[in-house]
Each structure stands twice: as structure tokens, then as C-alpha cells.
Image (tube, rainbow, N blue to C red; front, side, top):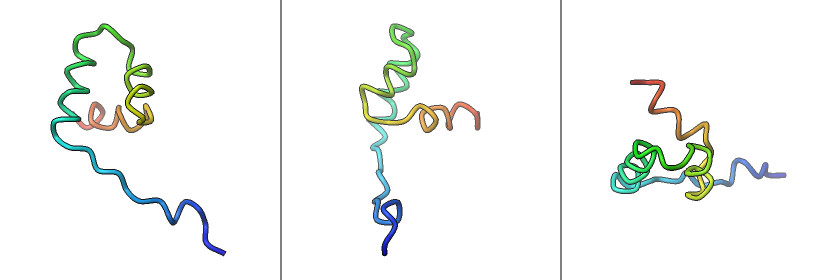
Length: 53
């Protein structure tokens, strides 16, 4: 029996997609949770880059 998490494919986001999200966050018009939800990503992943800076 194959686990469902093992059959998932890793999603890759383009540099443009990432930069557009960053610009949207920096504008401060929406909360990070809202931006993440609208773009189909989990908030924990959207904060990963912020922690490594």
C-alpha cells in the first residue's frame, strides 16, 4: 500500500512568481496569511526565506 504523501510531486515556483509575492508582502496591503492562501501556498513555506535572511 503506497502512502499518499509519497506520490506527491514537488512544486517549483518561478523566480517571477516569488518576486511578485515578495512585492505584495512588502506593500503591506494584505496579511501574509491572505497572500499565501490566495496563491495556494502554506504560510509556513512562505516564511522560510524570511528566517534564513
